[in-house]
Structure formats: structure tokens, C-alpha cells
Image (cartoon, rainbow, N blue to C red; front, side, top):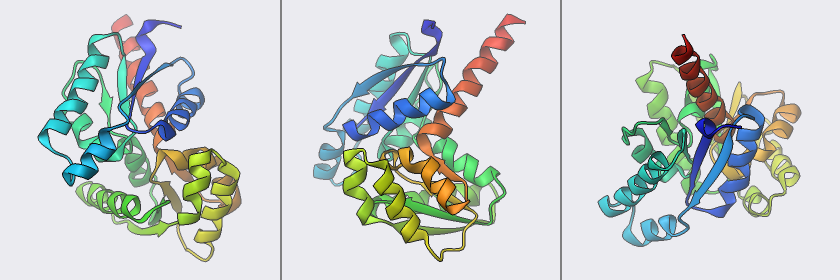
Length: 225
């Protein structure tokens, strides 16, 4: 293990830590996760009525802290702060939580995608952003939001089996080509959902980790030439 692959995972909630680490373990086993947590980012945003410039600067500070202290890349795990990562322009890659997952859903050639979340606000936010993402890339995708409140508690408790059961039941009768899991807390259920539905289940942690591995190992190979 080398310091070159230290990946800073920047969290706004502890619930995202395990799924983010699992995504790295599965897709980027050479990586060493470095968890950076500010558990007041979401409460402060809620109190302020949304993102403010001071809150955005707080996230930029965390990204700079990672970049200045040995991280090879940064992966945010809170979608609300994703635009800060996209605009960070640091010396290392900094990915928004669902940036790579949205790309995977768009580039997969799917005509119909279900965007799944465990509460309404997350579903609406992710669905809207995914539709914009697809439209900007000229992809004619029919995206449908599916809210599964029964998955919220089990996801927080780490019970991926119940999460999968709840999501599979909610998707019954829904004609889609792929399933986009909108929250990191749902990602541990991806394999079970895919097996039960026969449809690809795309998650932020796994897609993000795969993207970072491709970026970093490609860069390293180029520098060796």
C-alpha cells in the first residue's frame, strides 16, 4: 500500500462511511480510505434553508485539507455538497457523490432508469439532477423516481437484506432497464437488488471508486512512460 492511493472520503453523516469504504474495497482494493467527517454540514444547511457560501467554503476547506495532506483523490458522500467538489479545481481529483453513477447510467444505453431513494427529498433532488445530467449529454432516458420509506430505518441500521427486500417490492411492476440508488446508505443492497430484479443496480460508492481507480492508475501508468 502506498500513500499515492489514500482516498479522502468526506462525509456529512456517519451512515455514509461504511458504504463508501465498501465501494473502495470492491472496486479499488489498492486504496486506503481516509474518512473526514463534519456531522453538522447537513443540520447547518437545513437551518440555513440550503447551501450558503460559508457552508460551501467549509466544504472547500475540507477538500483542500485532504489535498494538502497526502490524499490522492477526494470522494464526497453527500449529494447536497456535490457541486462544491465539481467546482473545487484542486490539484487532485475531487468527485461528487453520484457524478460517476450518473455517468454510468447515461453511458449504459438504458432507455428507462428508476432513481430510488428512501425519503422524498433525496429522491426528488437526485431525480431532478439526473434528468439534467442526462439531458446535457444528449441521452433520451425516461427517468422515474421511486421513494421507498420502508428502506430508511433498515439502511441506517445497516440491514442491507431488508433494504433490498423493500426496494425490490417497491419496484415490482416497474418497467425499467436499470436502477440508480440515490443514497450511499442504500448501496450495500445493490448486489441483492440486482440479483432479484435482473437489472443493473448502480450506486455512487462503487461507481465513484471505479472512476477514481481508473483516473489514478491511468495517471500513474502515463507517468511511467
